[in-house]
Structures are given as C-alpha cells and as structure tokens.
Image (cartoon, rainbow, N blue to C red):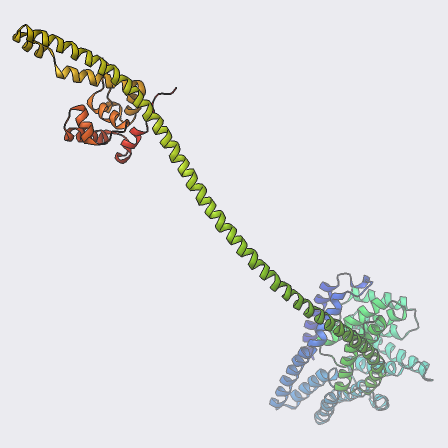
Length: 565
C-alpha cells in the first residue's frame, strides 16, 4: 500500500506542476484556451503510452507474486495487484479480490478477511452490479475492522448510493440521498478533522447536500487552495466542480475542469472514469463536435475495457447523438470537398488552356525575339563596320593632319633655307666673281706669285664653318627652343649648349638635321664633313647618356616643336 501511495504522490506532483504552468490562474479562468484543448487532443492520442506503463507495473507485481513463497507476502502482493486493477480493469480486480479472500481465509486473520470482503464490495460497486453490491455491503461485519477499513467501507456505501442517484426520476431518489449522506457522515467520524482525507470526503458530502451550486463551488475552490490531494482525488474533485459549473450555466469553466479531470485520469492510467463522458457532452454543446466524438469514443473504449455496465449504458446513450452530428459535419465536409474538387478541376482546365495559349504566345514571342535578335545582330555588324570605317577615317584624318603639319613645317623650313641659300649663293658668287677678276688681272700682268698668295688667302675650312654657322642660325630661328628641349632628355651633368657665337656643337647639328628629316647617317656625314662612323658614335652616345628609354630618345627629339607664331 505504501509503494502505491508513493507512486500516486509522484504522479500528482508532476500533473500539478504541469497544471500550474498551463493555468496560472486556474480558479479564475473564464474560457478554455486552445492550447489546453490541443494538450487534450495529444494526450488522447498518447493515452496508451500511460496504459503501457500501468501494464509494466502490473506485470512486475505478477512476477513478484509468482516468486513469493510466503502466504503473508502473497496476500500483500495480491492486494497490491487489486489496487492497481480496481481503477484499470474490473474483471482482473475481481479475480485478485477473490484470490485475496482465499488467502485471507487461509491466514485466519480477521483484518485480512474484512479487507478481502471490502475488495469484493469495491468490485461490485465499480462494475455497476448494485444488487450484489448492496448484498455484500449488508454482509460485511466491520465491528472489528481498522479505522482505515471503516473509511473504505463507508466510502463504498456512499459511492453505491451516489451511483444509484444518477437517475433523479427514480422514486427512491430521496432515500438514496439520505443513505448516501449517512455513509458520508460515518466516514468523517473516523477521520481526523483538518486532515486532507477529511477535506476530500467533506467535499463529497457537500456534493450530496442540497446547497446552492455557488456555495459548493466556493467550498471546492477553498479546499483546492488549502490542500494537496492525490491524482485520483484531483480527478474526482475536478469533475464534481465541472458538474457544478455546468449546473450554474458557466460552460467554459465546466469544460475547463472536466478537461483537467480527464488529463489526470489519462496520466494516472485510470479507466474507471466519467470525466471523458462529461467532457464529450460539454464539447458537444460548445460545438467542438470532432473533439467531443474523440472523447466519447475514448470513454466507450474505457468502459468496455473496464467492463462497467452502467458506464457503457451512459456512454452509449450519448454516443449516437454526437456521432450523428459528426456525420453531418463529415457530409458537409464531403459536400465542400466535392465543390472544391469541381472548382479545382475547373481551375485545372482553365490553367491547362492558359498554359496552351501561353505556350503558343511563347513560341510566337520566341520567333519574334529570334528575328529581332537577327536584325539586332545585323545592325550591330553594320555599326561595327561603320565604327571601323570611322576609326579608319579618323586615323586617315589624323595622318593627314600630321602629314599636313609636317608638310607645312617642311615648306617653312624649305622656304627659310631657300632664302638663306639665295643670300649665301649670291654672296658666294660675288666673292667668286671678284676673285676671278682679280686672278685674270694677275694673269694678264704675269704676277704669278700673287696668285699663290690669293690661293692661300682663300681658306675652304673657314668657308665651311661659315656655312655651318649660317645653318645653325637658320635652324635656331625655326626651332628656338630646340637646345632647351633637347637638354631635358639628359641629366644636368650630361646637357650641352651652343658656343659664345651661337654655333651648335656637332652632336646638336646631327640631331638638328634629323629633326629636319635627314635621318640617314651617310647624308648627315656628307653635309657635316664627318665620317659615317663618327655620326653613328654621336647618336649612340646620346641615346646611352639620356634619361629616357633608348628606343624612345630619337622619337622624342623628332617631337620637339618649331617656333610658335
């Protein structure tokens, strides 16, 4: 018995904590939340997992019973099996109650015999065999029983008359109420006032009284706030509280407490219950037909499994009404489903036609896009050709501009040197004419020694230097910044300048001639009266000495601009 109470206490603590977490204002709730209905739905689906746990515990006790060789120990284990089965399956509970009777008679222990007889009474009451229960109740002598056995005996008497009170139209209803209250009063006489058991049976006594619903509800709530009960006791209190709220017209609270009672029954593995039946009725009235049907079917499964005749009759009186409503809902859903199916089919046909049209349009668009792409490619090709032509024209224009500039520059240089050449030639002719006249006079006068003197006076080197000086002046007139721009191509210690007379050194004359377009070494050497090797050496040394890349040096010299106008 002690192990059962310990297990019950564990279950009560777990369920109590879950209830507190889900419903912090349980007693003040005005509506059942969707989350709690969802919990119920899940627990109804998972209820067999709790029954499996119950079966495991029962099987372990059966194994223990088989291993017991002591008559007293066998009796204890048999009573434990009865306690496990009495809220789970009545037929098995009755079997072990009969076993306990045999073992008790063999032990000749009066207390054990009375307990076995009370167990038989419990089976009759739980299974709805009220005639047999009444006969057993009358035959049990509890004068020598323990206080705990007296409480069990009177509680079963109260429960017997409470079950027979379910039909208020029964002509013996008032007598049943009186008998039930008498047994309830007898229970309280054998309990300590203020104890948890006393409070529990006081609530059951309150349920039998003629007090107003609100008075009973207040008493229930006060007890729930003041005491901690076992799991089955919570289930019983909550279902009675739900019934009173239903009588008071508060259907939301009635559902709330019936739902809590159902959860306790499921998690404690109790199949002798009315909570699922009442909850199914309440949900049906609220319009939760599918969940109500689920509750009623679970209640019928419990009643059949437990084999309680009066529970089967009660459930079967409600089940057809709920199932009829469920069938209406299913038919309505079928009609809606048919309508939805027709709509879906129509939409599929429309969609198929749309897909066909879109596919054709897509093909037309694809064809048009291909033609547009071909035209675009053709335009791009023509544009590319025009772009190439434009580039060629621009390049030709640039080359023409360069050529025109070079031609203009060449013409200017040519004009300058032609004028300079005419002046130089005229001066040279005058000098040569004067020399011829002088020579002629000397020959006629036979002054041959003077001829030799005249030859010595005529210095060819000076004439050449005079020509170079004239070239330098003319070039610097055309390119006044040539020396400055040329020296930018060298470091400061590698730069060169003209002499005091303004004459250019050979290196500058070579690159001046190149700037004028005379780039062949042979022509430069012939003009400057130098060897080709000397010209090459000057050009090589200048490239090597410059601060710019060698391959760009002469190009940069050719880019030096002439004077601006």
